[in-house]
Image (cartoon, rainbow, N blue to C red; front, side, top):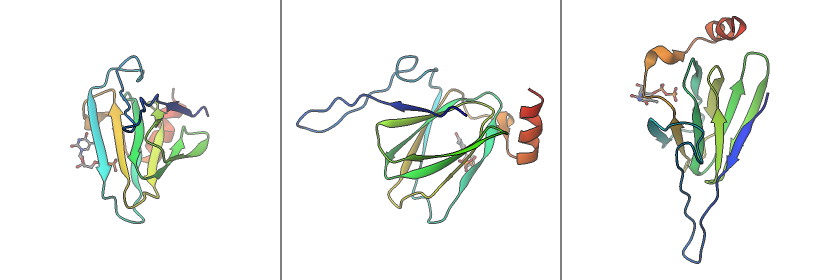
Length: 133
Ligand code: TYD
């Protein structure tokens, strides 16, 4: 399984760091939605779904967290702990997020607006869906 982690270019100077992200340039899709998770409780594991169409980039802009990825054949764990790293998650990929540090802010750039019908929330259904591809 290929893990695509973007290393964004910080514009740093003596004042500090700044990262700018533009659709189709730094991000490989049109950004239709941004959301973020914060104050995630200790021991919480969330996600537990795949998307039929939506693609996204996850950026832990503060703190750290781990992402479990599963394409139906292979599983991988990715740690996000720097504000300049972006994890690309393709469609048809099961994901779970966990081990959030208390200060973690996990921001998601998504290629689609929120649409519950794009979600696969049952793991067996996900396996069937990807095997029929
Ligand atoms: P949920 O899908 O449970 O989050 P996760 O899969 O990351 O654990 O989303 C939590 C709630 O937020 C749920 O009521 C749906 C709502 N929500 C929106 O309204 N818009 C969104 O873009 C997202 C991602 C969630």
